[in-house]
View 1: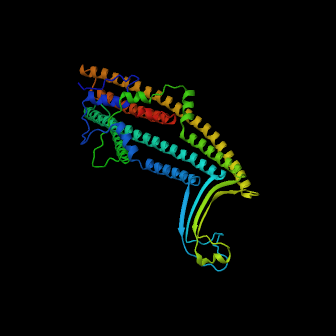
View 2: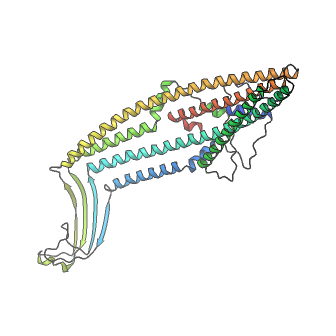
View 3: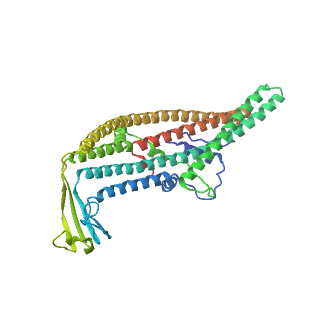
Length: 444
């Protein structure tokens, strides 16, 4: 008697768990692996550690923080020193009005400059966007790694089922040839069965190619070398339970708006442009700098010819105030900042509406795929029960080998269809969890 999978596939039975049950009951040999099995959690961890996209996003965030520090530097103490000699004929002055000196020490610190302060705050808000971009890239890498892992496991189990289909079809072909030789079957049935075998072989080739691609992709994401075996394991029921979303449509929509990185980035950009407008408007006020200078002058620059008293060591400390009387650039900056802020506000509203539509579509997709999975589950259950009935008839000699193998062939096809339906649902659930900010809980 042939041992067949007897899992009844009720709601909590995942596709990969079902495939594992089939291997257990059918006695299918485990795939030979040299190293330890790669778990889904470990695959995601390795992908986040080795992803070039994540590393690039981290560097871009560091660059953004560096730009913030550069803008802040103007409001912090800045001390410069220098030395030099200059020949002067006539009044001792350098280009810019300063007297030539042997040694000079300058101190500057901006106390009040609305335009510079606006640019600093805008840079801080845009740096927050780079942090959000880093988190978004990490989420995408997590989904890519998890999807590649789950699909690779699904493909390998589907291949095992297809090889079983191939064996059943070969038995059917032999039985039909025997019946044709005995004039009990028409020769066309041989061609029809050969076509079935060819279709199974075609599906095997496609799955093998897909498996090779997924393995290469997973190795690229995780950094696992070709010399090391890649043994993926089916996801367990606890993972399937974590993927399930129990929230209502309104709750899902609210969570998406609260957690969507692109929407948060649009809000930060709006705030950045608001800071630029604020700085531009306040630029009509004076700017205030604290300045200081110590210089050592030289006697050979003829200072005594122009000054009654020569002082070699000079110290100047004070507040420098610059009052704008008329600045065409300031009014132009204000007008530009207003238009840029209006643009950012419109883009923010559009992004919020787009996020709402996208998450609604993702939620609908999950519901549709759950319904498709349930159909595939019941179809598979029916196929299993049919095989059990046909097996009992075959043991009693009431049906032929061809009929029992055809039933097994149909069951294997339904297994493959169920695995495909369950993987599609898992993929949609991962995407929805990413959109609602719940992805981290799955891989805790």
